[in-house]
Length: 110
Image 1 (cartoon, rainbow, N blue to C red):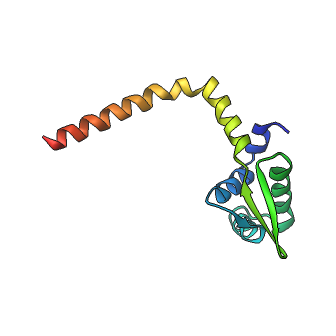
Image 2: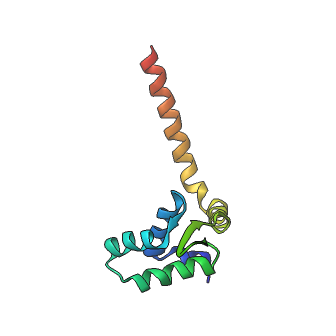
Image 3: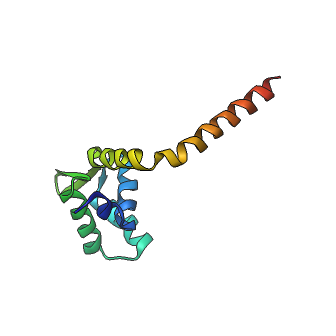
């Protein structure tokens, strides 16, 4: 599965957002996603499996719990692809914003 096929699903993106804050138990992830998306626990497990099998998440056992965490390398690869193809569209705008922020800070000092 291509990285953007994995990331294209809103449930999987939400799971990655949850995991970005640190390692979480599968049950905790499942509870949040079930509440927000109205899907079943087996459906959440399938999404976790897709993330794991495609390298976006890793899992480790701690007793009977399964703890999931983000695996950053595939995200770096997706970011690199964006940088190569699209960052040029928003970089000038971000640079202009940084200039305006700096200008505003200077004006407040004087």
